[in-house]
Each structure stands twice: as structure tokens, then as C-alpha cells.
Image 1 (cartoon, rainbow, N blue to C red):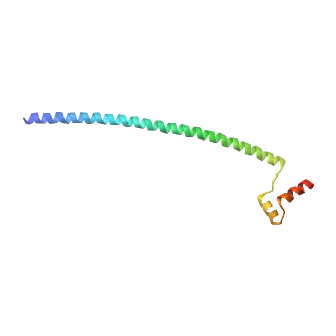
Image 2 (image 1 turned 90 degrees about the vertical axis):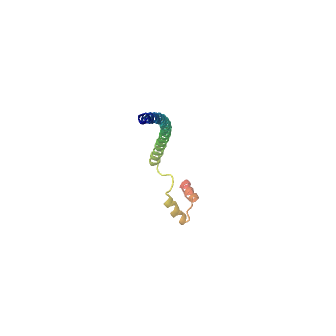
Image 3 (image 1 turned 180 degrees about the vertical axis):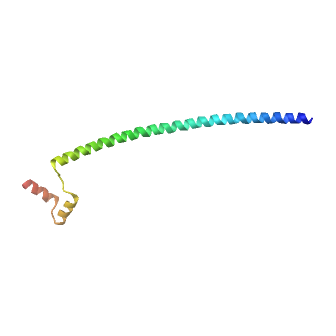
Length: 107
């Protein structure tokens, strides 16, 4: 009887191990699917952000080119406005922007 009891216990243990192995396989499959879905979302986010950054870079490069062209034009034609410090100094001495523009037209 003792041998029969040991065999039954071993059979029950083997069945329990098989069930545990099946459960672990299912869990691993589910986790793998979750990881793939998460990875897919991350890749989509990165791709979206990359496109947005490329657009912003193109806009910044366009703006830089515009500013460089404007700077070259200003350097070629000369300065059209006074520096802030010069305007401040003139204002302290009572010379207004209107008076400066009048002198330009008269003179």
C-alpha cells in the first residue's frame, strides 16, 4: 500500500507541475503580447516626435536664413535705427524721436 500511495502522490505532483507549466506559458505569452503593444506605442510616439522635430528644424532653418538675409541687407544699407543706449541718452537731453526724424527730413 505504501508503494501505491507514493505512486499516486508522484502522479498528483506531476499533474500539478504540468498545470503550473501551462499557466506559466500562458502568462509568458500574455506578457510578450503586452510588451509588443507597449513597444509599438513607443515606436509610434518616437516616429511622431521625430516628424515634429524635423518640421520645427526646417522652420528654424528657414527663419535663420530670413534673419541672415535681413542682417545682410541692414549691413549693406546701414543702420536705420538708433541703439537703445543712444536713444536713452538723447531722451535724457530732451531730444525726442520726432525731433530726430524732423532733422533728417530738413537736412
